[in-house]
Length: 463
Image 1 (tube, rainbow, N blue to C red):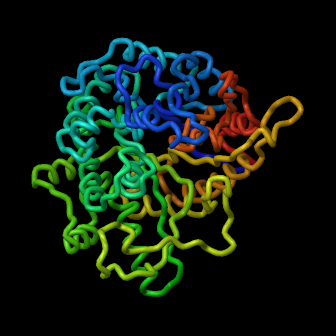
Image 2 (image 1 turned 30 degrees about the horizontal axis):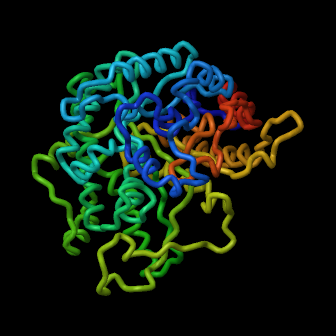
Image 3 (image 1 turned 90 degrees about the horizontal axis):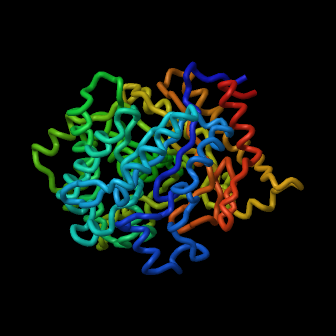
């Protein structure tokens, strides 16, 4: 029996823009806008307008999630739904009523809410007017929005998070063109990375003004940690992995927990002439406003090798001038998603947090397996028999259990996701849920993994 600590949080994660649909929203976020402008950019032309219809179905969806053993739900508030005037931070009362009732419904069903403030969904008005998080003014607007959330919902919500996967904002929007605004600008991505860390610190400062630092209410951030593994022991491959680790993980992990950026990363960016613009006052704020806990999203490792072309070559600055991706022969793959399956990395993450980050409280805030055409695996009763997902979750939970046994301070495991949700450009190509959503009828039913997870949650472990 793999038994987990007392009061371990068995949960699921989703986000507002991926579940709610954009019903009754007076503002667009960047994905609403991009879909309206270019629906062909999205798989099968499916956009975020309906998603899993959580805006309309939450009173039925939440008991269904509880039936699947979900005791904690991590979701997000949509900045573009809640706020009526972005400069004044005035609120839309209809949105306030929705989020209030959604939170109350969670609590009535014995589900604890964990609320995140930004899940890639920058209001497009702020993106077009200021460049989104390219602008430090927008970091102030974000802090004002965060304050409104704390004031409105903090009486019932004890766990808050500033961002989900801030690095993906860089990757998608500023480096590799899979999120709007579809830019390719390495130096600008560096500044956006700094501004995201600054925005997080400003939001935490607003939280501290209201709630102090006594631990009764907690605020954190959610990072997608992908440990960087070198292709070999060669000096060149090891150097590539060192930079990849600095860029992919430590650029957000170190400021969040330790209050400062890695000196080696700063040194490299300064040498290359691309270091962010920062003031002493901003750096002091980042130093002071560190997180209480971490959410860690994990799906795959980050394997790298020395770049084929020297970083000294004449080329536009991008972070990957210092490394190339490496595909390990014989690796186990989720071929539908194109990601390597390597549960051992979750153990490595657990020890890294234990040894290098004050053994801060943390939880697995996302882990799951997206598979396409899941109707292939339906039985005669219409249930998806997703044994592949159950085995994936078991393998990762075993690795996590080893990390906890070794002393890492992990308090929960959240599967991505509860109900099949809309997934950015990929829409519903791959399904991740414990609960299937027939998107044309919005009929929702537990998969085999949902019944399995309910049992694990009830007995706080598995055989």
